[in-house]
Amino acid sequence: MATIAILGTLDSKGGEHAFLAERIRARGHQTLLIDVGSGDAPSVTPDITREQVIAAAGMDLTELLARRDRGECVVAMSQAAPVLLAKLAAEGKIDGVVSLGGGGGTAIATAAMRALPLGFPKLMVSTLAAGNTAPYLGTKDIVMMPSVADVAGLNRLSRLIFSRAAGAICGMVEAEIDADGSRPLVVASMFGNTTACITEAKRIIEEAGYEVLVFAATGTGGRAMEALIESGLVAGVLDLTTTEWADELVGGTLTAGPERMDAVAKAKIPAVVGPGCLDMVNFGAREAVPEKFAGRNFYVHNLQVTLMRTTPEECAQLGRIIAEKVNRYEAPAVIMIPKKAISVISAEGQPFHDAAADEALFAAIRGNSKVPVEEFNEEINSPVFARACALKLLEMMSAAPRSSHRGVEETI
Image (cartoon, rainbow, N blue to C red; front, side):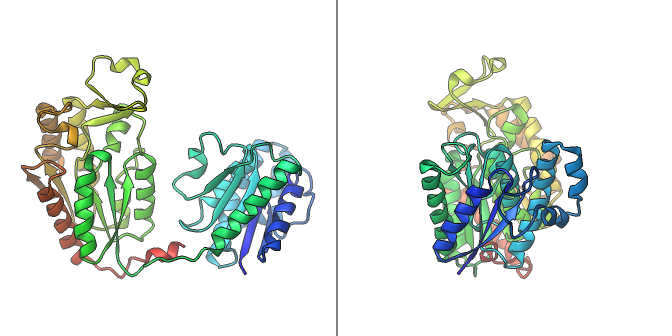
């Protein structure tokens, strides 16, 4: 029998959350009803009151309520609920969490869910689930389920949706986990244009006894990889696809933010870094590319994705950024450069081949790097280059202590 936290604004949506709790208990699990409302008194009796939620973060609800500012209260609850929920999870008092909400309720509940580890069951039934959910998900595995209609009372539709939500969260906590946490964990960054390289390097590293998690360098993927590195679960990093920095610098759609590549410095673990796909900036459909880039070299990857070649000036800036980021790493690190091509389409004869831009990138890396830089007369997807990168990371990890890295199963 599991205990499932039901987090909600019980002043406005008490009956709906009580119905959800009843459906969960009918499936044999216990519930913990947590009130994060800030309006009228809750319409149902919670197991954890709003005052207890706020107190968990050292705040005073009396003063907040006295100001009668709903936005301020939502922000406060969004800060306090993560503290409480993380504490309950760490103490083993809850096995999953579910919530029903509109805008305010979704903001509070997903903030709390983002404080929980990867693998911990999290389900948000929301009026916002059909829109842009990125701000609510962050880098966590929160399942967003559309409420279809507003969460406003019990009716034939809401009873159906809430009953399915109860079944979903129960299924999540009941699922058996087959996770092998015995092997040290390595993370790698990959794009379509570096798939062959990472696939071959992954094979070599896993044959040596490691487990490799590959993250797509799509902005969200880079942020997720950074979060996992910072968690202390990772033994080594194969960051050969640093393309998200091109989007961050130039203004593309797949930026991972200015903190990309910072986590390794905090985690103090070995890293092999490369300039994979720094030849390209990502945009949506061709007609959606900003007018200021007219006249640039474009490659239509598909109807939804247009790539733009980086210029020599941009490449020089990117090379300096990459080098300066890696210079902060305290554990062994190396930058590996495939001189013939940094993506499939930057090879000689391909649409993004630009020797001057590539050399500007490589020269900036050489000129600013304080860590070793190794250059290969190969394309990035060459098996020779992939093997060299994999063996270099294995060499550095073999010299690093493994005892400080927790098993990945501890996040579940």
